[in-house]
Length: 403
Image 1 (tube, rainbow, N blue to C red):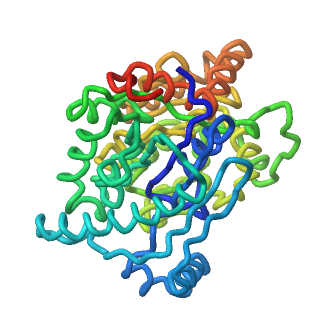
Image 2 (image 1 turned 180 degrees about the vertical axis):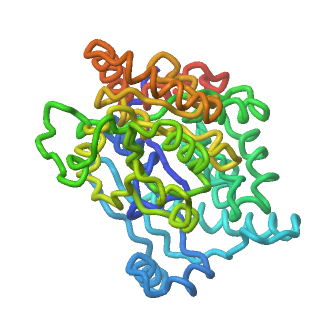
């Protein structure tokens, strides 16, 4: 069964006008190639209106609410973005369950009412809902909108974050239970979902790696050219909640002949870490997104020394695809989510294994291995990701509703 000529409503935790990358936006664009899509921005809540009233995106929403007329923007043919003309209550930190449920139901009803008006204008019929991890604001949309199929998409262990902790531990299992099926971008998250809904599937992760292609890279930044090889590198936000500083320090001390290059903005723990005192560690600062491939291209081994905690353990590490797309040997922390990369990376369980695997990676690398890595990463397209979502629908016991 194909995801073709369908009407799809997308709700989630990131609006279309977000300034950061979003899985949901990429999936929406892929859906829109063969279907009609309505992408719903989550509505303005009272706390956000007060705290961020000077933000241009919030100002736009305040104006729409004042006018009382929702805005439907055509992004491209058969693809629309809805700005709801409502304000909802801010209840994320509310600890009283029955009161949270009461107000949340009212919030959902308001949102559903706005969506109903939009789908009437667009003449959406027999639609499905794709919910990108919105466990609160979209909790009752299955009941209020009665889609033919309700899909819940999990891509982060959100209940590890403060905003979702209070009520998320109770609400996310419930929304997974009521969904017709759950799809996850990591093996770890799919296993969690399967505890609550047997129709839960790992669908992988889409990536856009077209810029991570050695054949199109012509720039050679002076700051990395000045560093002695071999270069063991990491590029991304340098934050202690996601990266293990002890592993990085051990690598630099155990392998004084290598250069450890760290690229990205630092949090306070990184700024004050011992790494800054080591002569073979180089902090190159933050780089524009379009320059990232040119720096990775100069790594001899790329690493992802993940700090294992509730926040990180289930994440699909998109940066691994970017490293592999350039053919780089990769040493990363062993997790269930990393199991899909078993044949193309070196996985470490401790700091000693990091050192051992880095040395092995340097010794074993070859043009043939680089080509295998490149081909593997380039298969992880958004088109392939949506195909896996389609396969999950076909495997689900709810498929008979989808016609």
